[in-house]
Each structure stands twice: as structure tokens, then as C-alpha cells.
Amino acid sequence: MAKSESRLARLKAGKRNTKVVAFPGSDDQVALRPLTLAERQAAVFAAEGVFQSAGVKFDVATSDAYADEVSTQVLALALRDPDDPDKSFASSADELRRNLSLDEKTALIELYNEFEEDCSPRLGEVTDEEFKSLLSEVKKSPESLNFLNSSTLRRLALSLVSELATSQKGSGSTS
Image (cartoon, rainbow, N blue to C red; front, side, top):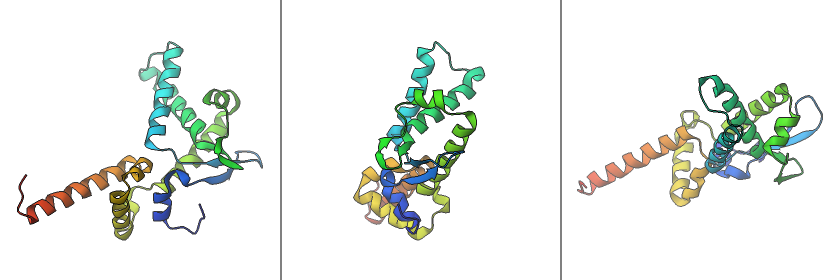
């Protein structure tokens, strides 16, 4: 997406958003694409699968390793070929795990998190006008919810419930 686009345009673009960044420590490039809620969930489930297949139980002692594996799974889905964002950058999370240094992975996950926040910021940072426009868009095409973060979804849900309650009272309905 062009940098000149508004935050609202980036919010509504969802999965079509991409950003090409320098691969850490090199002149090579990699594209980033924000994940949908389903892809985020798939990354968590894949991390759990890695733990299960290794016979590792999730507990306090392994929680950092689990979070690290989730971030590897996220990167496997979010890193894209800069020449064709429909193609993955790496063949698998396992390939990333084998080939990324800790510093490279840390830099990439930070770049991804910043990009994701730019594409789906916390609605506390969105103007009232942007929020009203987003709310209108969600009403027209609910599938756009797939690309919003949890705090954004909560604010939208509260707004819709409040709007429904207000309209019911205004019509005399109490049910």
C-alpha cells in the first residue's frame, strides 16, 4: 500500500497491505503482510503442534520457548516474497527456525509488529471520523473484521451493542 494512504484505508485494506523492508543485516528485501485472525490462530496451533510432536509440555519453564515458537510461526505466514507477495518468503517455519539468527528474528518480528500496528492500530489512536467510517464499512462487509486486532474488535462490538440498545429504546422495544 502506498504510504500516502490514510490510516483508515490501511485498516480496510487488511490482507492486501504489504510493506517491503530490508532483511536485517543485508541489502536483500522481504515483504510483510498482516495476518488475519484465522492465520494468527493457526500460528498458535502450529506452535502447540511443535511442542506436542517434541513431547514438550507447556508450563512456566517453557513459556518463553512457546512464545518464541509462536513468533516463528507468525513470521512464516507474514514474511512474503518481495517480488510476489502471494508467495511465502520461506518454505516453512522450520526453514526459518534453522536459518534465522536470534538477532534477525527479533528484528523481523519487531518490523512485523510495527507494520501490523500501522495496519490495525488500537482504536484509541483512531479519530472519531475514522472510527465511524470503519464502523460503516464493517456493517457493509463484516468479513473486514478478520483483519482487526482484538482491542479494535472490542470497541466495534461495544459500539454496535450500544447502537442496538439505543435504537431499541427509541422504537419502544424492550426485548
